[in-house]
Image 1 (tube, rainbow, N blue to C red):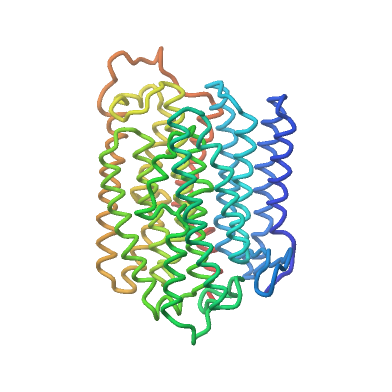
Image 2: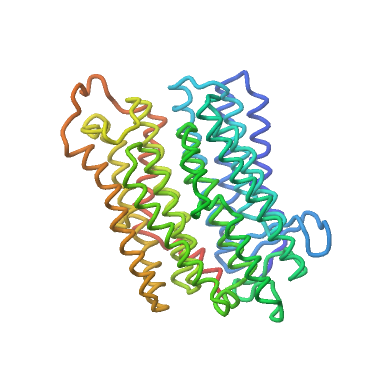
Length: 490
């Protein structure tokens, strides 16, 4: 049943008001941080309030403005929307508490600008989550890009500006050069930019020229460069010059998740399962992103810088999401979409751990972390748990994603994809396991002792431990997100 309601606007309005209050409180540090915490909590509650209706199998729609026939600023809530909406709002709470400890410990400059841009990036993520058309999706997608640029360039040094320049060139270049033409072509072919009512049929008429449909599809896949599919991935490792909480925002909360969410939404709600199956575009996509999964994992093996290794891990792991949706069967789509949530909790844990290590030790290199587990047991214990999720070891969340993905590949009897999933899991273990082994089983680094190395502030460590614990909970009790995604199927 379709329900007309303005509820999808509420999280967006809350974040907008929060960002304004943060800006107005720039001279009062405690008040500014209070608005960040309050805004993140209220945003999550607003998103959560829509769960009961979606759980019943309903959809929520709301049109704010009609620009032209078939072009509207409208909003839509279904199972796919809520997965990303819940993750981006809930993880904002973790990031906010962590931000307070991180920014204060390092006495970072321009904190008001930082918190304001962080909040508006979340506004963009909420808008992307609940967009009901390509027009709305594009608008909020660009908001994320614009307001994360100052975050990437936060340190305002040569390295920061170089990373931010590459970030904006890649993302703005692809959105203007590929996404806009894709939208125009879609409107010409289909007569609308509104998403389809279900994931089966899509918005294109059966008599539409298949060649032009394939062109539009290719423009969308490459246009959403936030998904970091090779060869349009290089902006992501370069953006690691940003403060660690921004890296967490980029990798786990909003930016790259917006990319893979947008691709998933376009595949399912613009092209539809039937068209992607009959044209074999889904299968071609699965093979294409398989290269990214394997190649990025191999590159991650070569990186000694912890954030760089995590960055290439993200490049690889994101393509699991696209791969699952591209399989176009129930298990594959389930595995891909729930990996938005499972990867989110695990990856934010890993990046927050990297930030805690830096605050406590000022170390960035994995080779310098021998014995660090003795001095920072909570941080490195959480890192080990999140690593197991990335590898796909039960009972942590990543295992559930890979189980559904493997089932999906086997259901369509695609042996090459099965092999990709198995090989990538071995590679995941190869670049994550040595970090934990070095931290706990290779002795204490010369000159390190408990007296001069200790855990980061509690405002940083507590969110890390909670996020890692949730990864375990999602592995043991995956029914909530599986159930939400299941509501998408007719």
